[in-house]
Amino acid sequence: MAEILVKNFGLCSYEEAWKLQQLYFQEALDAKKLGREVKNILLVVEHLPVYTLGKSAKEENILFSEEFLGAKVFRIERGGDVTFHGPGQLVLYPILNLEDFKMSLRDYIFNMEELIIRTIADFGLKGERSLGASGVWLDVNTPKERKICALGVKASRHITMHGLAFNINTDLSWFQKINPCGFIDKGVSSLEKELGEKQDFEELSRKVLANFHQLFA
Image (cartoon, helix red, strand yellow):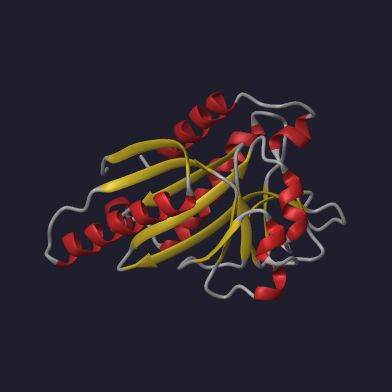
């Protein structure tokens, strides 16, 4: 199985991580076109507050003007609608050649969701997939349905970019300024909220990465 180089940048701006993604993504595409080995890279980050809109996002899902949002807004290449990134949220950006892992894009998305489902299961939480919505959810098909991990992906020639955002100790009040992922009838949660206390971010990061390597090894 292909090796994955993990690059942990800690707390950084969205612009910095986005430029790195674009750089590694283009390098991977160029290598593939030339028949060279693709470097599979996993960027691990925690962002300063920012809102991002996917290709199909509707501007009206941002409920305030940027002046009152308190954070920058970026329209980016991934699928999905609007979401928030900020401190206390673990973000993974895999730039992978899925052919190296013998995975379809559908398999890849399933495994990205699965790694969070396995992680939160260690805390007695049942993470699920919700029909017609990506990511990992709690209490699916009930009035309390809420998302604990968002997922948004771009892929070209089986090379991926963007990824997932797992709410560990995230300040959820930021989500009140948007319709998260375009939904008005579903909530957002974090591990801290579900368990009633702040979690060890570094330890959670290690757990997530261990599950990532297990699923992609």
